[in-house]
Image 1: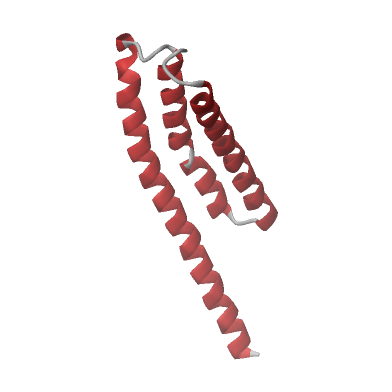
Image 2: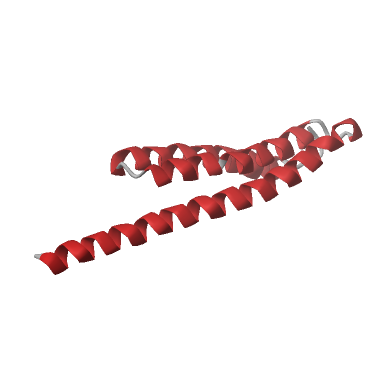
Length: 110
């Protein structure tokens, strides 16, 4: 618990809480819009949340060597999270371009 200063702990914990809130609000946005691609983004953000929780856990236990596996898990979840968020963002973009094309076709036929 003493490995980090109080201000650094505040940043770590608030980052985890903010990320969890972002996941929740993105899910809610998906419900409001009816666009399932936003649900995918909220799920895609989970590995990054796990990564952050690994870092906080490791620091909480004073960076003990017996928990070094958490550092590896954190790194792996960061990589996985970057890929999943990228794929989910691409899905949102793709849905947006489909919607734009569909709207253009409707306007052209009227």
